[in-house]
Image (cartoon, rainbow, N blue to C red; front, side, top):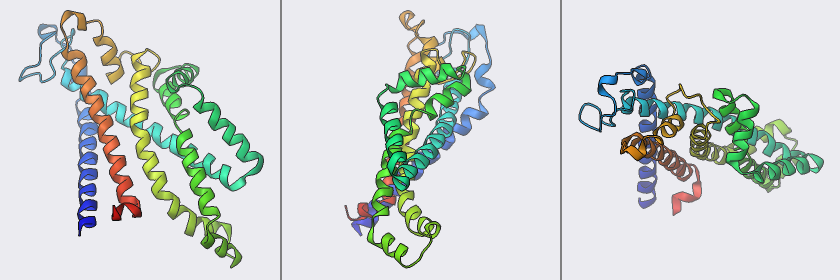
Length: 274
C-alpha cells in the first residue's frame, strides 16, 4: 500500500507540473498581442494590483511580456529537446548495434561535442545559422544530444546481450521483430525520461544565448531579451524588470525538472519498491 501511495503522489505531481506548464504556454500565446502594447503614460510603474509585474520604460505590461516570453521558451524547448532526443536515439542505437568503426566514430563525435562548453557551442552554431529563431533552434538542438546518446548506447548494448534477446535470435526471430518486441519497450522509459530532462537545459541555454545577443531578435518578447534589456534599468531601481522574469524562468525550469523526476519514478519498475 505504501508503494502504491508513493506512485500516486508521483502521478499527482507529474500532472500538476504538466497542467501548469500547459497553462503558462497557452496564456503566453493568448497574451502575445497585449505584451506588445505600449503606453508611455504608464511607463516604469512598480508592481501593483493593476500591473502585477509592473511596467517597463515603454509602458508595456511586464506580466503579459513575461508569460509570452515563457511560452516562447517552452515551445522552443519542446522543439529543440525533441530534435536532440531523436539525434541521440539514432546515433546511440547505431553506435551500439553496428559496433566497430561506426561505434568509434560516433563515440569520438560525442567526446568532441562534450569537450566544448555548451554555451560556446550554442553561440557558434547559432551564428553559423544566422542567429534568430533558426539559429537558436539549431544551436540548442545540435549541442544537447550527447548525454542521452550515451545512455541510449549503454541501454542498447545491455539489451543486445541479454539472454532473452539472444534466445529470441536463436529461435529464428527477425531483427525487426526483436527490435519491436524486446528492445523498444525496454528502451522507451529511459528515452522518455531523458527527453523530458533535456527541456530545462534547452530553455536555459536558449535564454542565455538570447541574453548575450546571439539568439532571438530584440523585437521578440523572449525571456532572454527581457532580462538583457532590464540590465540598463536595474541601477535606477527598476528591480521588477529583472526579478519577476528571472524567477518565472527558474520556476519553469524547476517544473520541467519535477516532471522528469516524477516520470522516471513512474516508468522505472524498481522505484515501486523504494
